[in-house]
Length: 296
Ligand code: HEC
Image (cartoon, rainbow, N blue to C red; front, side):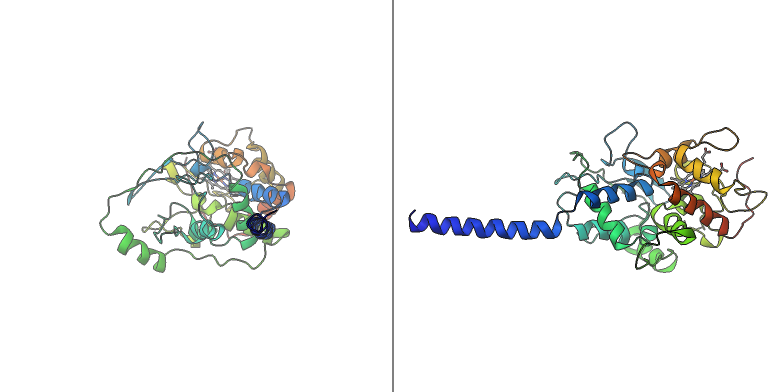
């Protein structure tokens, strides 16, 4: 072997060794990915990022608000049109702080003020899982903001003044009502649909989960506080069963957006363990009852 060839070989081996060491530090294990899929299911399958009958996570679902129209983003690992070229930290920052790598703010239709309550470990696992979903090349559709200076002035002011800030717990509670609270308030983001909104469109957390007559996509979202006449009076078992099957105690089944988050996309609430579904049910029994009649 000549000197050049030997030098090349050494360089190659060094490069390989460097690659192996970064790989061992960064490549998530099968267990991490499985845990990430569980977290993905606990969010309801990130279904806002999937158009019905289209590839999962490719984005393009339309959301109209008082500010204009936004389309959900492609969160598949495609490097050009998805999030494949972002670092883990950049993806996590977008999920929980609503900032793109270029510093641009996300419109809070993506519930970062709620996902802000997710612990780092769960987010890391979620990102590991997102990277395993098939990449789809599909460019994001530009948003149409109709309110002047919405993003430069209104949004930062709104975030500072009204947005409920969830402080991430240092570790995820593993059992009991604390576990239920974490799943409801942060990961499952139940309040994004079930909590009424104030005039500024911030969730009115003084009436947490008290229902919204005109929730996302104009759906009527029921009051799930334990109020005896206008809220949720099902047993814990019935609530846990509903989150797995969509079956209501009266024989009806979950429809619309609730059906979507239960079924999920690649996973959904239905994939939560019974212990987690019961923890959610138990926590729902502990929140203040709010009288708020939704629907007939
Ligand atoms: C994307 C919006 C959305 C999210 C997120 C959501 N829900 Fe719902 N939920 C709905 C809608 C809409 C309905 C009404 C479904 C129907 O009419 O069949 C509903 C119905 C329910 C019901 C049935 C209440 C009744 O009186 O019929 C329960 C219980 C419930 N949700 C619990 C939860 C819990 C717990 C979470 C979080 C883990 C959650 N929901 C997250 C939209 C949502």
